[in-house]
Amino acid sequence: MKWESQDLSDFSPLGLKTRREIHGDEWVNLNMENMTEWDRYWQLKATNTNWNQTWARGIIPVQTLSLVNLSMLAAIGHWGEFEHHFRNALNRTKVPLIQLRETMLHISQYCGMCTGGEIWKIARRVLKEERIDLSDLPPLDSSTLNLDEFNAVGMKVRRDILGDEWVDANLGNISEWDRHWQIFATNTNWATTWARGIIPQQSLSLVNISVLAATGQWSEFEHHFRNALVRTKVPLIQLREIMLHISQYCGMCTGGQIWKIARRVLKEENIDLSDLPPIINSK
Image (tube, rainbow, N blue to C red; front, top):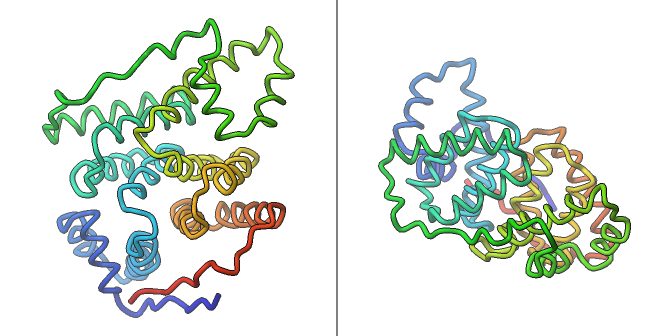
């Protein structure tokens, strides 16, 4: 693949158009009005190497990218940016409320109670400020929260996504110490957001890869990257696109680590890359 150097002499029209579509004119104009020679090249870089690429190419739908961004921003604790992108997901990319709630539950499961508490508080305030009608939001089935025994649907989905070998290895070593942890993981994770189908499993794979990269969980990232290849069957072109997106939002060091892991996994799984199309840099 031949990479062209990014032109930072002027703003890409497509990048600026996409940035305005996602962020809104008011937000973009505010940034541009306050721009100085000190941060002009940062604004150019953000527009031309982010909004002109993964957001503009359409390889991953913008609604899915919105869910991915919410997940990464929550994982790394960027609350101001999380609020901004949550508002954009409501008003601009038009993510359905039921999918936003499902993603929030998913983030809370993978990032923990403290992160969950913060994002639900932010979202509740934004929903109130935007006067969003919640009357048609359907209730969720809470029967999976029983921790007495493994939920059958949760166990099936866990095996579908992780594979029998991985699940059997975990359950084969179970003891009374961690039995309820295994039940908890199965019933409150695999029997809920993974099983309900509100968000497609391929999209959840992209969300998971992003959260695990953002939080530096390299072994779990490798595991879910492999599962995305082999089990949820995320197209290679979308996996490459989400890796670029993660690298833009989480930085060079995170990017270097995930591309190294992915290269090794692709080799181990004997993945044919010959049909992977080159990336065309838009103007």
